[in-house]
Image 1 (tube, rainbow, N blue to C red):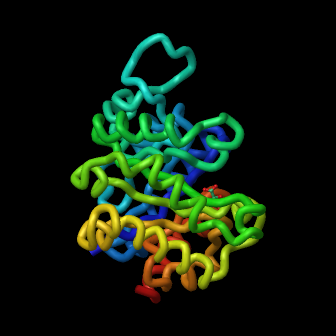
Image 2 (tube, rainbow, N blue to C red):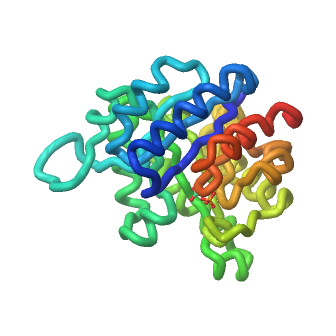
Length: 257
Ligand code: PGA
């Protein structure tokens, strides 16, 4: 059975006080409202992780994730955060290869492959993001484009290592734009990604890999997206900043699968 995951990517938003309040609200809601097999991952800015760990504690529904990590375990890399630092404070997930990191900070597939390795070495679960820009979608070459991202970022892994990966498909044209991929577009790409994983690692591993959809996921479209056979949850930006919206998205599994 694939894990159902709703991850909240806060990006560079919220001050400490508001972040703590948001987390407390989410903790209070999930106990009563969430299906047992649904996991929430909160990915705040680095500097709030320790404080939020104190609020989340060992909640069975909620884990913490970072939005990035460096490709080295330690050293002279001013301003960077290393994977073992995250593990040591109780962080379990790390988003890698978000399109904003790729586009604004020049992260290449080659660099991301190294980040994936270091994250796994230090027991973090990578949420590996892939997705095409608008011009690629307009040329209808998204399968090839995303396939290359996945091959270059992940397919060097052993089957055992790959089985720890969570994939997030995020069409760039749908991020923060209010435009969501249609359920057909999402399902089609998720099925393609799963097929590529099957070809490389076999059916068992592919069937157990959680593939999240990201790009303007909201309470009113989550149920439809999560009802797609190959969509195992969401990576949520804007709507993760409001507790009610975020928990409602996580609850969308309730009535679907
Ligand atoms: P959005 O962001 O939900 O605001 O579109 C998603 C993301 O960037 O992960």
